[in-house]
Every structure is written in C-alpha cells, then in structure tokens.
Length: 328
View 1 (cartoon, rainbow, N blue to C red):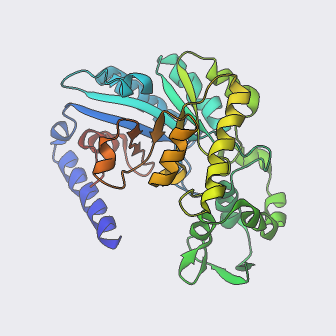
View 2 (cartoon, rainbow, N blue to C red):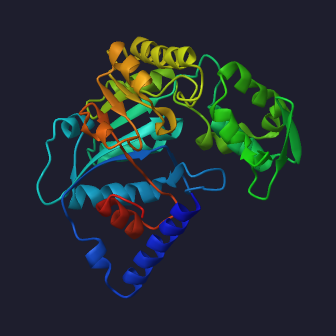
C-alpha cells in the first residue's frame, strides 16, 4: 500500500514537471482507449474535506465540454456493444450512489451537451435518508467528541477527523457490518447530526427521491442501474445478507422505474464469483466493478472495470491519467 502511494505521487510529480517544461502536449496526445468513468457527487465548490467523492459543477462542465470536443463519448450500452472509434479515446460515464446533487447539477450539464450516462442507485430510502458513509464522514469532521465506543471498542479521533481503533478506522470497520449493527453508528453520533444545519450540507448526503429517479429513467439519454440497498461491502457481510441487498435493490428500482433493471454496480467495486453468479441468476446482464480481481475476469464480456475520477488533481493531470488508463 505504501509503495502504491509513493508510485502514485511520483507519477503526478513526473507529469507536473513535464507540464511545466512545456511537454504537456505529449501527455495529452489523443490515442485509442476504452474507459468507463465513475463519478459520485457533484457540488458547488469541489469540497474534499469530508471525502474524495465530490467535484465542483464548474470542473465537471469544463471536463464534459472538453471530452465531447476531443473524444468519442458514448452510452454504456454502446460501450458494451463496442461501438468504438479508432485513434481516439472512447468514454462512457457512470454515477454511483444516487445523490440528489447528480439530479441538481450533473443532469442539466449532461443534457446541455447531450451526453449519455448511467446512474447506479443505492435504495436505502426505507431505512434511512442518507448513506452511512456520508453520515459518518460529516459527523466525524464536525463532532467535538474525541472518542466514542462502538461494539465495546474505543475509537479515538485523529487529526484527519477519523475515529480509529486498533489502527483501523471506524469507516473501514463499518464496511463489513450488517446494517442492523451499522445502525449503532447513527445512535453514537445522533446528537452531532441533529446539531448540524441539514440544508447547509445536503449536497454531501441527500439522495434522490423516487420521483427524481423515475424522471431520470424516462430520459432517453440516461439509464438506471442498481447499487445495493445500504452500500455495504457485499464481500464482507454474510452471503445471504448480500444476496438480499442485491435483490432488494433490483426490485425496489423496478417498482420505481416500471422497467427491468439489468445493470448492477458493486459498492466499493468489491465483488466475488458467488455474488456475480447470483446477479446473473436474478437477471442482471451487466456488472460494473472498479478493478478486476484477476486477469481472467477481464475476459468476461458482462463485467467491466471503471476509472474512478480524482478530485485532488488538475484537469490536465486527470486527462493525462485518463488517456494512460492509470494514475501510476
């Protein structure tokens, strides 16, 4: 892990030097490639103090304008059908989680430039108005608590606004918890959440409602897919719980959209063969990942890895990494 971070930073430093020396055109030279991009949140300013999931709407529009001018931007359906152009980068856009900010900021920009996109929705609505990770990120940053107890373990807050026990962050522990246990986090920080002005931070936690999801599903530019029910790490919770998460997210979205939901994006990109087989069994035809577990997995035409957008780097750096297909 440490070596990967060093390699990543050295790669960015190398690109920065080349840009400053005037060799940026070499890094930005168009070339053939196939990339599915994955976004999460869009906000007004590109806030990164809570997590790495948000970019500003201005940056997003600038990026969309650039890629539609210079590359071949296509729907995910066309991507799966390999409707690629030669000698250029071929791009499809996806959004995970189902934030309201996608509806507020991303959709109007995508419509303006006539860019297709796929939205993978977490269907937690009947259980909570927010995803646990967003709740935890926001309250961890703003709380005055220095330590809390969860499952009899003492977590202490560090200077990065993370609560740590035994060298592990509460967020990483929470990924593997069934939702019934995970709900204890809401109780631990209930008073902190209630003390926050919700309108001020809604771009960082509020989800689309059923009507907004349906509206997107009816737009010919867009498609809706499933992303689990509670955004649990499906490879870490019990298998039967994971199957319920997958099935419930599918049926809930089909009820909302009144159409078959045939695409599933694994939360955190984590997957395993048993879960992929179950997805196929219940009618998912396409599975979206982040990275393949093995080289063999890349040969499965139904599975596609995706390129996660990075809010910490400039657009030039982002484009250079995108063209290369790697941040390293």
